[in-house]
Figure 1 (cartoon, rainbow, N blue to C red):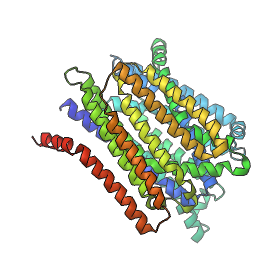
Figure 2 (cartoon, helix red, strand yellow):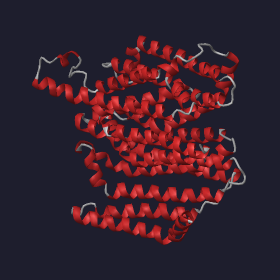
Figure 3 (cartoon, rainbow, N blue to C red):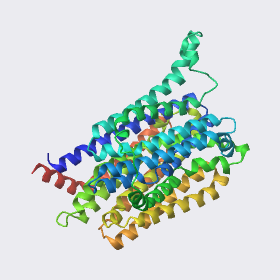
Figure 4 (cartoon, rainbow, N blue to C red):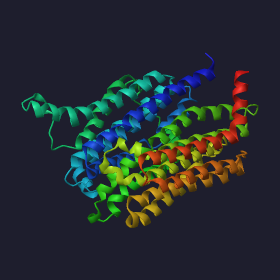
Length: 495
């Protein structure tokens, strides 16, 4: 098989499974918004933010280290066991410590009445960290089908257990109080079933990966481990900084918002509306899966490396990203029907989060320079700068503006990271980006959204009519500026 076709095929499998999985998981957000009050959903948002941080810490960049060393070693089995056993040890130690000290930890982060939440999430994090290397092995062994299947089974079971515990069990016991379901369900657990569902799904993943887990040599090469840790620690820094940029706000709000302003209510409102930007996230994820291998394959050869092509990719990335931004913001009154009306007060953060995610996507597009030039330390610098800005702005703005301050912090952080990456990138690997054209698309899209706010109090018919005019005008702008190039590309493809 042609290696390039295989690369595209494997990328499509990984990409589709990831995007479909995220989309299916996302539907739990409107489901939770109907079942839970905002302060209850705030518990889910808050604790899952902690989970994201802990998972990065407990994998400590070892997945990337495994890829790097196993792909170049004549003893991949030794690399596998040297990667896997340290994760087994650290994950087990972490789980044991949390199980012993769950109550003090729960009290420290505001869950003194529910130490069971901490125990369950600790088990989820430990399992997910441990299974990260078996998943990496599947990718390195070119087994995308099994990789995608296990991922989808995990997501399907998570959704299924949520539906079972939160909807089916109460329904059965309402009509049949003596049904055996009463032995596995208690209404008092409530939001705890969200975390129980995660745990059961993670346990299923552990079982499905048993062949990869038990294929280890059960020995650690200490010299190799030292090399891997030295290679992986910058990845840990980038990962932690990235989590600060994306999740620290959901952790800080309960500490920085006064109790009389109901901080968990604000976390719930913010978390639900933050996730409405999922379409932009899926677009960025698809872009990453589709184009990163493409960039590396072309940059490896001076004959095919074409900075002008990268500039064109950036332009169309911005165009499609802004179409998503306008599609969601101009028709937000339709999109908001997905979540319960009790969460609608937070819709004002959606345009900021969408734009922030677009800037993050542009940052990712721009960051190809330090990957091509093997200057990944600059990625760590940029991530740390972003993390520092995020922390500072959240600490300053949350007490003043609540969750709206968090949305502003995310926007400023990703904008700043985008700008820094552009200027450093142009110094070390020049790409002829058409900044004027990019600015036209971004500023015009934001301006059309701003003008749409004038009609927000009109009747629904008039509002949708006017907003549709803005969308048509934006499409006409794209056609006016890009039609010649688009027709040329299509003609070349036919030829």
